[in-house]
Amino acid sequence: MTIAENIKRVQEIIAQACVRVNRDPDEVTLIAVSKTHPAEVVLEAVATGVQHFGENRVEEAENKIPVVNARTSVLLMWHMIGHIQSRKAKNIVPLFQQVHSVDSFKLAGKLSSLAVERDIRLNIFLEINVSGEEAKHGIRATGWESNPGVRESVWLEVGQILTLPGLRVRGLMTMAPIVENMEQSRPVFASLTALRLGLAESFQVDLPDLSMGMTDDYPVAIEEGATMVRIGRAIFGTREK
Ligand SMILES: *Cc1c(COP(=O)(O)O)cnc(C)c1O
Image (cartoon, rainbow, N blue to C red; front, side, top):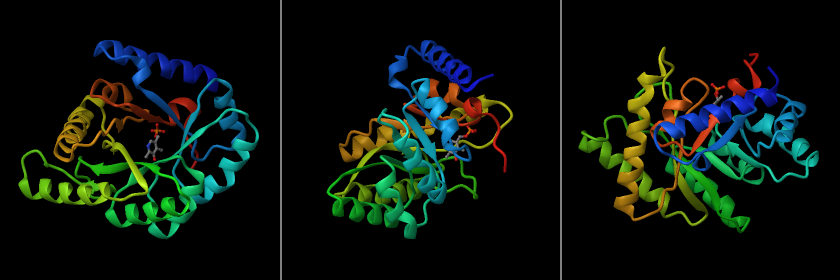
């Protein structure tokens, strides 16, 4: 299968998932996760009409993004989806239009100051760990629905981040655990959707986006409300280590 065929198939699966839950497919943005793949491969995806790309490592992005941008007249949107050490925050701001992996007030504060210096507002997502896996990054929110202590700490951290002047908080992002059957991830996605609603109501803010769903689980993520899906392998094939 070519990249163009893969993208067409993913778009069909997105559309079918939307039909099942009466959503408009235009509400779902496909982010092609191009990590580990070279500029030429990204440009093949650009040629099919994809405009959103996800990268997870700063050094790789610094080498790739300027090359891709220079070789197309299409205005691309670059999404940082990987964990960010705060000392790398300054490299992120000039390269990426959206940052999905903001997981602490400390990192958010750094990004905000850098954005203010450049006179922009950076679009960010708050990465939330709803699944409870220890190894995962993200603001810890497992059980926020029933555990007042968890709820309080999530609300405190999000409330602080919402005060930062250089950021526009677009919504929430999560990664579901690796499971046999994507149905097992449904509660994780449903929990993120409910959390978005709870936070939006409490803070009286618009949090329009939910970044959730990858190759193994995006149909279920869309059924549960995803507005951005981050898809690598289904488009570009398996990654070499
Ligand atoms: C790699 C990655 C993806 C894409 O994963 P696939 O399983 O290849 O679709 C999505 N989100 C994040 C945060 C990633 O690191």
